[in-house]
Length: 100
Image 1 (cartoon, one colour):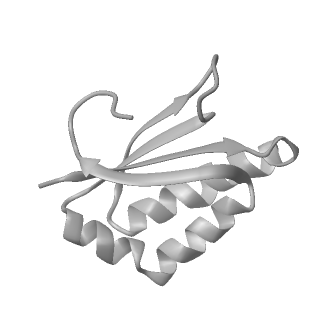
Image 2 (cartoon, one colour; image 1 turned 135 degrees about the vertical axis):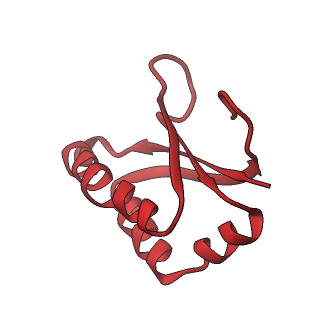
Image 3 (cartoon, rainbow, N blue to C red; image 1 turned 60 degrees about the horizontal axis):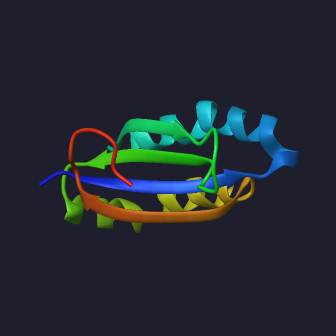
């Protein structure tokens, strides 16, 4: 059964330009090289919620655990953490539409 990794974070204001360059140039291609499929990205425009929410699909919970334990994922995550705060991630059964 496919699973969705739901990640949320806030962009550090002093690193917005570098953050967007990293996400487009390294994070998304890196996620795809790992065999994960970016499915959605949401931006909070109003309210006290995380600024960014990203959904990434994996073919199974087992496959997701293997990928999340990889050195490549660790390297991508560490780079992301340099640009964001309040990071969270959870794994849920994949469903169509918005999941939080």
